[in-house]
Length: 158
Length: 91
Image (cartoon, rainbow over all chains, first blue to last red; front, side):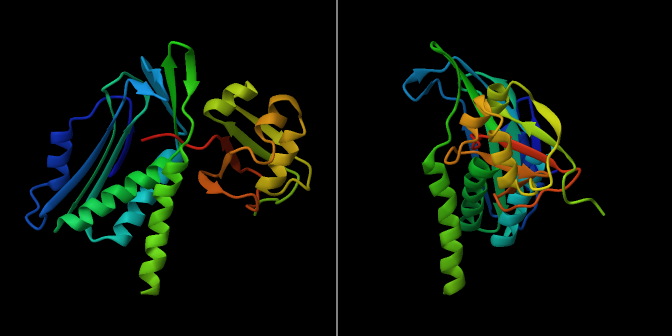
């Protein structure tokens, strides 16, 4: 299953080995790991809780992976996103793509991450010295996702 | 074939909006004119209080109909699951 939502941690080495599956046609593996920071918006973060919308989350992630596979020549893609309570330095998310060459793997991996940040229904709630607060969405994340649409339009016009 | 107007839908509230509204979900019978996401948002905002402030025009609110992101013009039908939530912050 290329998309998993889970409370437990993941072993990046084991996941990448499984994704590669000894496929000799793969020449590139690109991976992104998102982790919990101990500071956000000028406040110390002691812990956070990841909430999601079961049912939609899996569907949204599967759609994003399918879009990436339609756009780039990648062999396999994997998304693991954790939910529930997390501490600073914990792993939150793993996105990995395999392909014959690095360009496709890098691009597909970044695309999946940018779309996940704006379309997959996850929310972070941080514990700070001033109390708990929901993390606000950033306009820069919308911009990051939008540039892939611009890139596609440019590609279609070329 | 489902009825398109004036019938029951399930509403789901997530994250900050669930806390603001004080309920995680509810089942509603909306009047017939409430047949799009935009009309539903306005109808819920008319409840006043947190509903009015959180769902006011211009507030960043996302809506999903049957697990797909929707716009104001997206139609809603009997039996739909409609989720209302703040912009997402995962990753």
